[in-house]
Image (cartoon, rainbow, N blue to C red; front, side):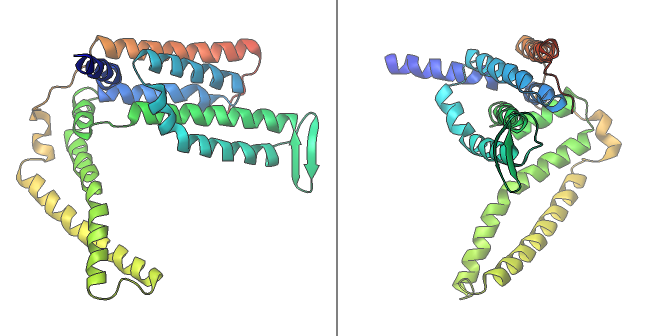
Length: 264
């Protein structure tokens, strides 16, 4: 009984974000990145990062899962911060200097801002865009954003074909090893396999395009197309977008009032 209850609680917490319309999740990711893209200061990025963590935690995202997903982003943020601190535009008090390297108050401040901005971008992308259902996203793009059906369906078909490339690459590698060609000349092997994969992708894309045209995926009937899965915006979507817009406004207003706002 307790295991069942725990499973339900875990599914409910995780589903708080997954229940949002995929278009809403895409727009939320864009809104979350907006303040750090229009300003270079550390304060707006700090407000956005803290706000995102609070909102995502309230929506049921587990801290342990977020830390695991953000590990590569944290490494990239640390490398970017180190580069900015060592080679960024100097200014203010000099902490350390050697040849072309000059660590100053300005470069250290910019390094901290870079870390925060990268974490905001990574957190919004990983948590909000991670695990999106491509079919549900296509339904939302066509029905909510009213994008052309032919473009949406073609993009969906292309994205689904991308998942086949890894298996095709492995199959080509096994075929070369079976013929005794897999262990010599790495550069030549890679070039040959890449060309074979390109030819295979073109053939598969041509067949897919022909099949889609034969089934009525053309511009003539695009306005009359119906959808098997309806995609609509509900109250959670409106609440999420409102909260994201309010958080954006708060971050920018705090930055402007504190005098740290630095437009790109």
